[in-house]
Structures are given as C-alpha cells and as structure tokens.
Image 1 (cartoon, rainbow, N blue to C red):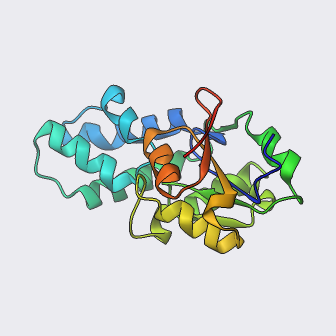
Image 2 (spheres, rainbow, N blue to C red):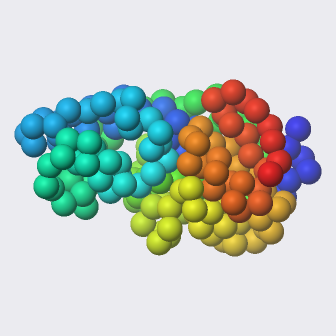
Length: 193
C-alpha cells in the first residue's frame, strides 16, 4: 500500500511503541511533590510535544510559578528510572518489518534522542531505522514540520515522497505542513495533504 513512497517516517510514542502508562506514572511522581495533579484529558491534546511544552501547560493550568524546563528535567529523570517498566511494541511494526531494507525509514519523535534510542534498542527495533530525530535535535517542535523535514533530509528523500505514521494531532499537522502524506494510526486513515 505504501510502495509509492520513497521514505517512511514514524512517530514513536503511541505510534510504534506503547509508552503511555510509563509517561503517566512519571508525571504523577513528579507533580505530586509540587502539589499538582496529572490531568490526562488536558495532556492528550499535547501528545507528540516536547516535555517542556507539556510541563508549561500543566504549570499554567495549576497557576503555579515553576520553571517548565526544570519540571521537564524532573519528569525526564523520573521517566529514565522507569523507562522499560511498561513498554511494548504496537502493530505498526508490521509495516516497518515489511519495508525494512526496501525503503529508508526514520523516527521523528517528541521524545529526546537518547531516550528514543534507548527504547528502540531495548525493544530490539533500533536496527530498522536509518535516522532518529528527537526533540533535542530540532529547535521547532510539532506541529511545526521541522522534525519531519529533518528526517526527510537525513534519509535523502524529498518531503513530498515521504509518508508519516502518527498518533497525535500535532504530528499530523506537522506532516501536513511538511507536505507529506500521513497515516493517522488512531483510525488507520490514509491521507495526502
């Protein structure tokens, strides 16, 4: 179905790997000492965002005066301690396996590069991908297209010849802004912008 595309780009969290429970647990651990709570409904629209952006939203919703970058660092540290506790591979891996060795493939994620690499290595998936572009590899994050445009550049494929697999609204907006086809894995919908 995707043979006409020269490059495949995958979001990681929620698309390729189930990490939601681990992220939720880390947020709860970090927020509690600050007297804040984790509101999943408020966080879902920020899926695919870098940690500091989610921290900023949480801080603003609680109307407290905490540095979002510091809170993001605390969450990342908590997440690293439990990173492999409750992660699993999602069905999109079948597409990855099908195109392995046939098309260049990249990971374009809102997670930090080192965290993405560690998760992919832990699940024995790292070898499938030619490139990882994490939140710390770009200056503008989803819904800005920079993550996916950087993936396309690094795998040597024009953006309009790439397809993105995503599970978050910000990621889909980024794919559209990059002029890339995309699959919303939440509904397995195939669209071209």
